[in-house]
Amino acid sequence: MTAAGTTTRADGPRYRAIVRSLLSDIEAGHYGIGDRLPSEAELCDRFEVSRYTVREALRRLQVQGVIARRQGAGSVVTPRPAAPRFVNSIDSIDGLMQYASSTQLDVISVERIIVEGEQAKRLRCPPNSAWLRIAALRHADDLAQPICYTDLYIAPAFAEVIADIGRERTAVHAMIEQRYGVNVQNVLQDIEAAEADLNLATRLGLKVGAPVLIVRRRYVDDLGNLIELSMNAHPADRFRYEMTLQRHGGGDGA
Image 1 (tube, helix red, strand yellow):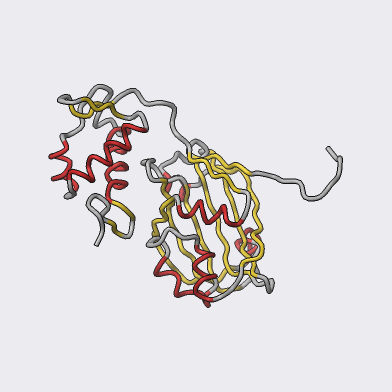
Image 2 (cartoon, helix red, strand yellow):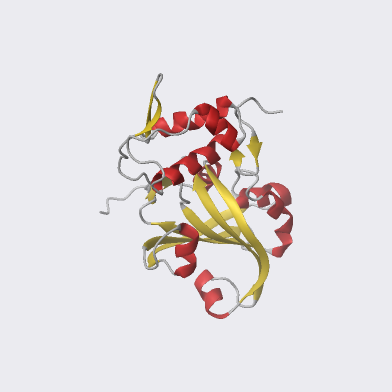
């Protein structure tokens, strides 16, 4: 049993869904600056949740500066601050696990494919190799729009983890390690700027040609086996990537 206000589904606590829905309504112009949002009771009826859950969602919107809440006046839409960006700060493989635990991955589709030709070159994987491809959108808790579209590829030998992807806030490579006893030794990453094609534009709510940041990762175990690949497309205006570089050993080079 879960505590009141923290009812969970596959996509996490309900207040997150309410936040996203209300943000979408505001961004679509259903509620303008100075307009009141529906009352707590109306929101409870609309989303079929407790008053506690509604209040947590409204508190999150207030913290973001989206609404002002006054006793007796309800929740009023306020001028929005600059569009927030999700900041991903990475300095180790463990940092990837923290990223996974602080966001929600929503699976769109799963299919078994053979990667060949240009696609194999782009992913830097063996040609004509079999993979399970999972298409998904990644959400930050308090942002209405997704922060990432992901094509995730895992070796067919690890198919059992698919049922848990999106249900648990755990990095997929960590699921594989825990269930199959493998050890991810290296994550090879490349980053490039690109323009959104029709597929990415549709998935991420962008215009075709909008700037995106493409982050590709290849997960290699301690035996040199490639166990997972991912292609992550981030909208330029919703995401910032940070890295910490540390010097090992001595040296006075610039």
